Image (tube, rainbow, N blue to C red; front, side, top):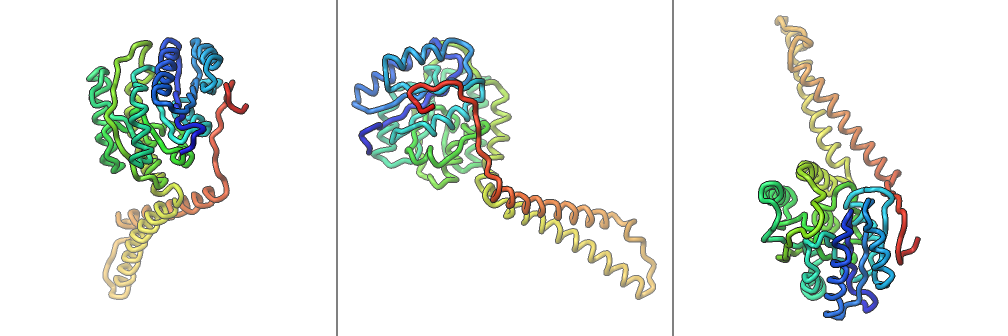
Length: 324
């Protein structure tokens, strides 16, 4: 392991002015007790309070503090995306800024990555202090759905407290609201050694939660998206082309049968209805049209993928101890 920076702690935040000094001091205490070389990267996601001013003061007394300030609120995924880009530590640890994640978990997470060889370790808040109806029950249902669809056996995939090998965070791109599914993206990128650690969950000491019920609905939709893109994002023709071809063949088979039957009736002088009067004609026509459209969608997707790479762009207002 490199001796220059062993651990990067990435902390996305929005309006957490009360908790930041205590969180910083707690992290520094853990790092000094374990003789870790470290950096703390705060990502201010458009705070309206004095969070940035407090970060500036922390950076003045501790050169290990680095920070990025967004000009407006983009969300947690963009914050983690830029944090991952800036991280220099051999092990990258993410945690929330609300003091519900305990920095005392850092040594255990670090050892699981460096000594036990895990690519990614996700925290599991086995005992939670959130509201049972509004957060705990939906979270259990949400994680059960995640396990069934993704095949990754984590009890709390959305836990903000995670540890990664550096090469993991440099190999994935977190966008939209996909921070909930970083383990899925890591697995899709070839990092399958994913572990879990039971961690402390503390009651919120300051402020209020920034998340509502909509995150569970959006989370389910995002899970379907990331599952699809992880399988077919680099080869859209394999999905759209296959489905389109099958639909076209089904429609063509119906049409061929109707045409052959019409010719048979004409040859044998049997009375037969017009083809356009039969429901199967419209089924055949619909299948061929939809099949052709899906095939073309896959073909166009391949062209876009090969010629128009898309990159995220976020407006950064200020940085501390990072290249401007």
